[in-house]
Image (tube, rainbow, N blue to C red; front, top):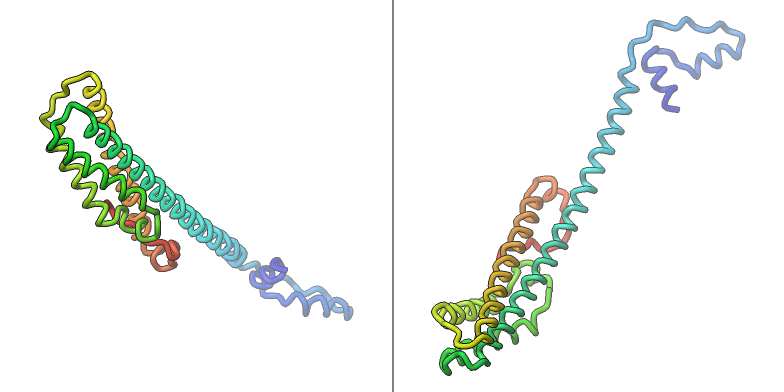
Amino acid sequence: QVEHTVSEEVTGLDLVEAQFTIADGGTIPEVPEVRGHVSGTGVAGLLAGALAIAWYLSYTAARLDRLHARVEGSLAALDAQLVRRAEVALELANGADLDAASAFLLASAASASLEASEGAQITAEVQEVGVPEERALIEGELTAALGAVVEDWAPASAAGTQVRRRLADACERVELAHRFHNEAVTDVRRVRAKPVVRALHLAGRTHLPRPV
């Protein structure tokens, strides 16, 4: 038992030998002055330290899982907002308030965005880069088209005014989703940069995400 080894350490007695001596009719040996209780405290301290380290590693690994799940969720939210923006932009292009050239430009960019979103899947590569380069270019073209068409455009009807308001709301939501995703990526990268996380590979094989 642990108590026996600690007692032998602090008294200098061999308890097993003392038991045999007494059983043979001998006298109880004189107990010397106790030298302290450092060994007992040390055992308890080591156990407490080991438990604290195990708890910290488990907590950090669980936190990483939650952060990676947040990145994936924010990426899905960004995708949804990009789709919504493209749908409203296409609705505006199909309306009667725009001239033919502006409507064609906006419809082409919005249709390309919707086609890109239909084939999008949250794969390991997408989790790492956020938005693939090809789709990023397509979304950039839609942003440019919206800026060229809508910035100085004055709706000629109540329906056009409503569509413009919805489009402005959709664009704002895209910006918020973009910011939220990059914040989630920053949190993951900050935790994964810690030496203990890298040394013990607490992130496993999960890709390191990058800001969009």
